[in-house]
Length: 323
Image (tube, rainbow, N blue to C red; front, top):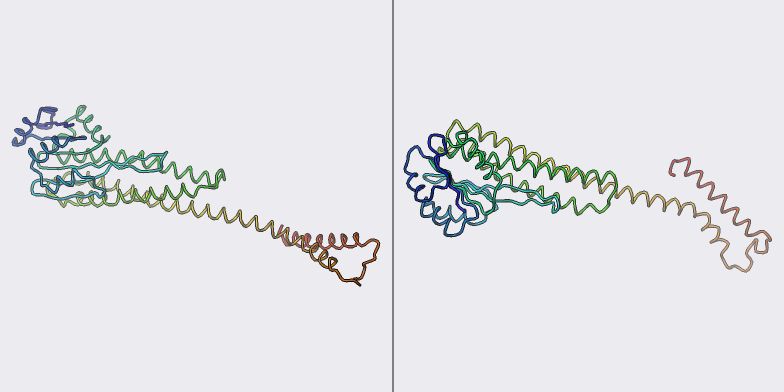
């Protein structure tokens, strides 16, 4: 699907006017053009990327192919960006990425994505409601799209945070003991979040520093604001990683405490049974001339010695606060 918008003097001059009209408007000094390719066919993206705009073959190759690594490349008349939007699934405890490719020129913006993106839909809605806010130039329009994309990071981050908080509550309430798999899954997703956000931080940082002439100087503070938000997400990922490490450590400590309690009980039982073992072992020897062999009250004597020694051991352990 191909969407197209033509702006003139900060106003929406046309929507989906056709590719022939867009070709003509590319040579108009005051015209600003946005072409959005969503799940395009091969014929559609070739018509736009190759025939109409004649982008570099390497940029087209990177655009059409799936790329896990965000990047920014500068060509003679445009910038090429690869960025990623994210979604988070509570059920699967997993991040899913959606790639967004952007070609930013002096008077045009071309976006390419294989899946629908909320940031694109939100930008289109803003254009329909208040076009002059975003229709001044491609760099301003690009900022708006990236701003909405980072807005959509917030729900995913909040869901991840809620999963971590729920895991902490589960550990402290001792509702479940088999949480190791959940902790490892969440740690894996936090690591994936860092792998997603760290390269994007570098891409936006280069724009915010003013490395590219196509981004006008008065827009740099806006991109620096985006950089601050990306840094905050990166810092949150560090916090989540530390939290999960703490959760794992607490879980291991609780398991060790439970093992220690079991060992303590078994040790006490073994200690209290020591007199019984000693006395019965002594009187269980099969010597022919064993003393007290003919006692009438031999059993009572053995039981008395055993009970007395066991009581003394119990009182000693109690006095030492080992029970």
